[in-house]
Each structure stands twice: as C-alpha cells, then as structure tokens.
Length: 125
Image (cartoon, rainbow, N blue to C red; front, top):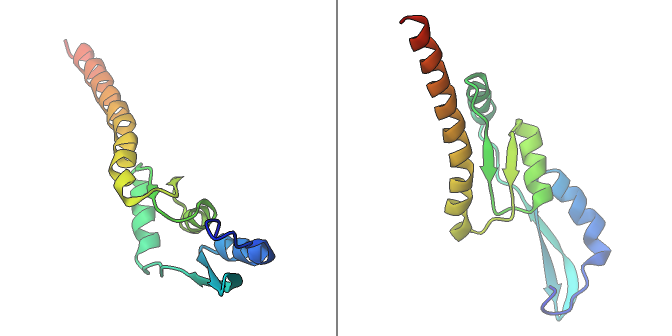
C-alpha cells in the first residue's frame, strides 16, 4: 500500500482491533484506492494449550518465531501463555533467530549442570 501511496488510515482502528484478536490483516486496493481489508487467523489446535502447559511444567520456556505482525503475535502468545515472541521475522531469518535463542538456554543449562556436579563431587570426596 505504501508503494502505491494508498492511505490505510481510515481502516487502521479496525485493523488494529483484528490484530489484537490474533488475526493477520491485509488491506485491499481497487483502482488505486483503499477498498477494504481481509483478515485471517490460523486455528489453534485443541492439543496446543495442553502441550504448552506440559512444557512449562517441565521448566521449558517457549519462544514463538513468526512472520506475523507484532500485535497479532503478541495476542496469540498471550492467549496461549507463550513466554517470548519474535515477530515479523522473514522465513530466511528464522534459523538465525532460533540460534539466538539457543546459546543462552544451553549455556545456562550447562552452568547449572557443571555447578551441580561440582557440589555433588565435593560432598562425596
């Protein structure tokens, strides 16, 4: 829309409301003028809340990497209790974003494991 100089301001409020419900919004132009908007949402599988609960109970933090708009992603994450959101990520950027999540978790887990092993070893010698 920006490339065509089409003003989406008249539908901004409606678009934001739909995004806050977890929907992705696309504006439609007709003959170079704003014609309306279309919104879509991926259905959440019935097993997802239970799976996320099990992960949390196991002490696992859940990160959602998505190409969706930040408002949409935050709404979905809030609904599901997801710990962290990385939004507006293009498909080719997802591996890098995933790698940015891993080192912290692995490093933390390794430090805890090493620390626990040292304490345990010292007690028994």
